[in-house]
Image (cartoon, rainbow, N blue to C red):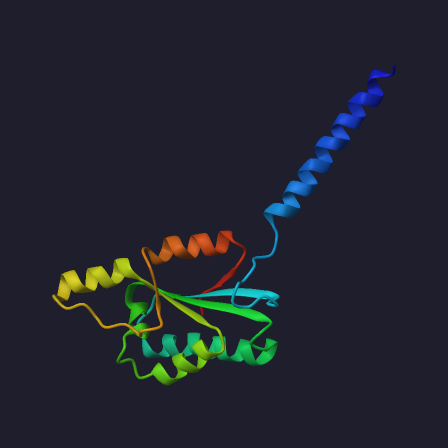
Length: 153
């Protein structure tokens, strides 16, 4: 038998396996809450300024309007001074509630919240529908690894 035939076949099979594995590793994320979503966005908010908070909320609202709420899965992750957006008494609560009603998730870094409590002696009250995560930046890394696109407006 021709040894070159088998050598070429092995290389072809190995190449095909790498091609298949690459396709699996770069598969689109799947959203349980938005099974028809085609776009997956993670918005980072690490700034406490009112202007930055408004910008992040506007980006989310504009994208929901552009793509439609079923076609885009949006998460807003807050950490550092950005957690102020999710304080229960934030003046943007109505806008936040509207975005949540359209499926936008808001995650809050509990590491930051614990630091605020340690520094001030008071634990801030958070929006009741916010989703706590242990470490905001680690959560961002995980979600991006799952295939979401990170944007920091």
